[in-house]
Amino acid sequence: MKRHVFSTAAFSGALIAAATFASPAVAQERFITIGTGGQTGVYYVVGQSICRLVNRLEDADIKCNAPSTGGSVANINGIKSGELDMGVAQSDVQYQAYNGTGNFEGEAYEDLRAVFRVHGEPLTLLARADSGIETLDDLEGKRVNIGNPGSGQRNTMEVVMRAKGWTEDSFSLASQLDAAEMAAALADNNIDAMAYVVGHPNGAIQEATTTVDSHLVPLNDETVQGIVDEFPYYSMSVIPGGLYKGNDEDVETFGVAATFVTTAETDEDIIYQTVKAVFDNFDRFKRLHPAFENLDPEDMVTSGLSAPLHEGAARYYREQGWIE
Image (tube, rainbow, N blue to C red; front, side):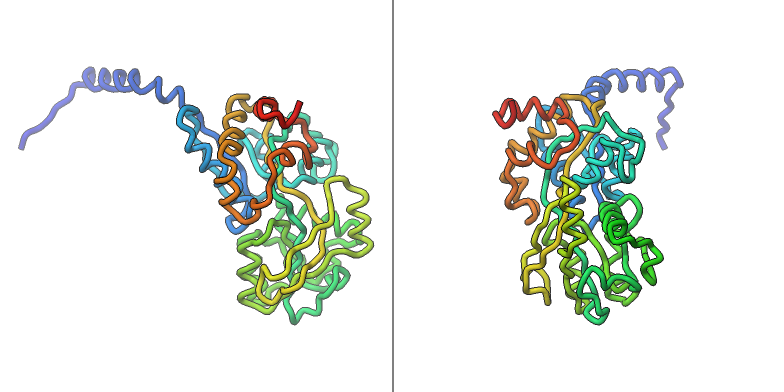
């Protein structure tokens, strides 16, 4: 048997040489992480879609990944801590974070920056057919999944609960399941209703409605109208009939919009290249999920944003003539 013997000096020299030749390429490559949400939700698709387009860029040398996270609040906290570079967040959570209200009471995150708005997201309440839940008021005394801490649905449900004067004790069970667990819990009769802030059509809602008789509950009473009147980032919306089994009629509810955010500290060129990847390939982006079908670029960069635009995004939008 032939043995290959390498001296320590030779081995060290080889490592130094390899590092010398590799260093320019490594130095040029930049890595970004986008916070999303549960894997059955549209936030996950948003992050994955943006990364797909960013990773197709030929000259930017940016590598993007978009892991599943706890959702809106968790994403902004991740950006603030430096664990994430960008993330998806509900428009109300963006407002609260920048202004120091709600979940961010007294802790305004003034370095938060908007990049663009994405799809609309109504608060979607799905109840088992045998639960007796037909209206928002019927939730009292029932087993309701109000969402995991840090998620958009939990944040919006807490707004509704405060407006109604409810606490978690108002329900016989206030579960905190994440998006990936809700549909199975409803089908297994572990909960009577699940709340989800999400774009439509949605996989978790489809899963639930095809495995158990269930219906969407309208959220359009005086309390909800008061919420919409009070907060500028909410609006009434309609979930079209026919999207889900057993739900043939339109259902009126209210909600927010998904927004894409970052921090002022993120490199201007990285944000510029990210928005360029999306809007230079906008037809491709819209095909990646039905919730993106009716998006309009100029509307995405001028409405539903509470934090200032990141300068990298603003530079691209000015080049397109979308903002001044």
